[in-house]
Length: 334
Image 1: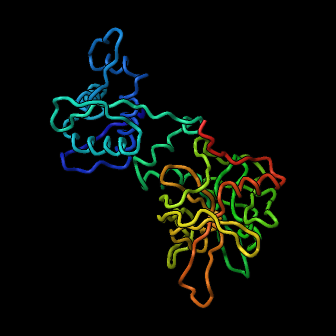
Image 2: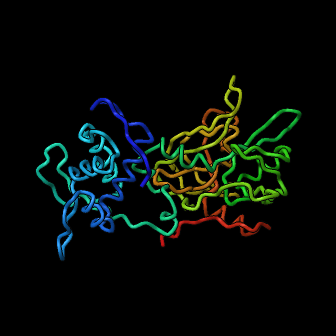
């Protein structure tokens, strides 16, 4: 569990982002059948031979006081109830009965089965913790790519695939002279080679040295019609000193269309701006659905845009045809 102490001075005070993350992780462990005996010991309760009873919200609140996570855990009843409700709605925990504690009578088990990929980290908490968590967690792996065209600075977005490979669009690579030295967050990396696909808008930037940290727990999958999603990237903002990381919400509006050039994309309703190209399109459920590519629009109606993405299966196909030693981490649900 995260070593985290919650400080709160009022029952009505909203929890900070860090407090909510810490509480959700603590709750996941507390209601886990695997941790049952250990948690009973912390509560000072004897194990019941030959059976296991689900633990209650009241016991979780008492547990937080026992481990010193908060001075007066009963001040957090309302906030804890809301967080556990979000976890239950998203299938992270399962309600299995009620007790006599009127304010939060539920008993829970943590029964969600994690895939091999999910078990490597905490991306699967995204549905319960929402966009703020998605922005923080996935934002660590979305990088800003800088280049020049016509003596003007241009930019695109990339997704870290490995310690030395960044996924982006072919048109990001081909549309500007990418600077040999890139600043990805706090890390400075030198580019060794660029690999744009000749017909699919997918490319890989290969770095000279392994200087990045790639996610171990974030899987790729194809989009489903109507599912909520978020587009993440670095579009330039007028009058800003630098391009910030921007998150924009929407949903899948079409799972796949073919263009007259033979390309295939899916469509979504989130707004993507110049500079978003190559950035991840992330499902609310916590997987990457694809990357932002060129928009579809009618020159006679320039404001009636359709926003397009290259799907996971198309990216995987493109990578198989490129001379790069990297694979897409596809979620196989194993």
